[in-house]
Amino acid sequence: MSQRPDTSSRPALPHRVRQRVAVLRRHLLENLMRVAIRAASNLRAVRAQPERGDVPGWVMVTLMTAGLVAVIWLLADDWLRQLFQQAVDRVSGP
Image (cartoon, rainbow, N blue to C red; front, top):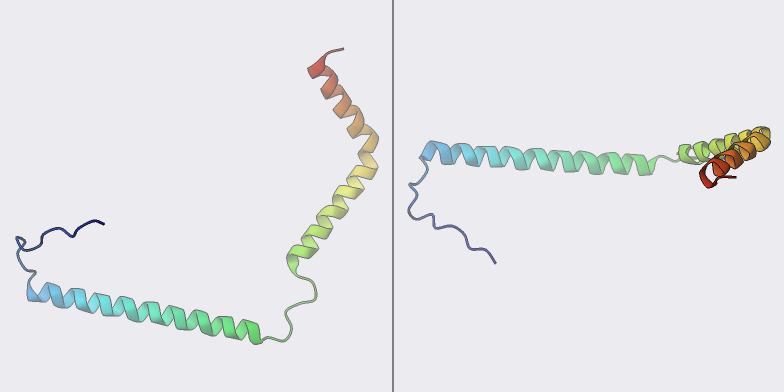
């Protein structure tokens, strides 16, 4: 466990600086609390909505991508097979 450095040899901070640090800490904590309360409120509002959509967007994107792959595969099956075979032949030789 690390030990704290010895602060007894350092001069004490001026009173104004200590006050300013205390004010800044208080403002920081207030802002953090505000953000946390707002986030919790927004989360409750989202959860309370009865209608969140029939199909989530990622499901629709996945289905559309699968459909496009299937259509391209059906249309270009022979060409893709020839292209693959040519590539393998070039690498492995005759």
